[in-house]
Length: 106
Image (cartoon, rainbow, N blue to C red):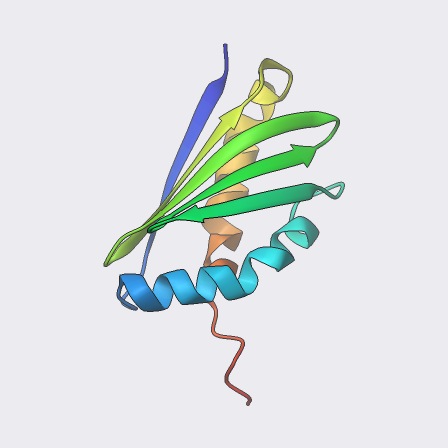
């Protein structure tokens, strides 16, 4: 049985802009997962389905982009369920990276 993590990332971008930013930044996700990872992604409307391989385990994740919140769910395999709280904290702390606008130059 898997353990589900759910995190909401509030934003004021609107759904279309949030989705554009996530699409532009999803390639950076691998570098934010401790120990490295492989990430495969597929958009269906405003939902991004992910297959993440990390720490020798495979996980399914979903990112639902809404008008004022991005809802992230990760299904942890039993082997990683002990890390649910640290992973949820990492998502809450670092999840905003997906919503950064890297197209603007400082």
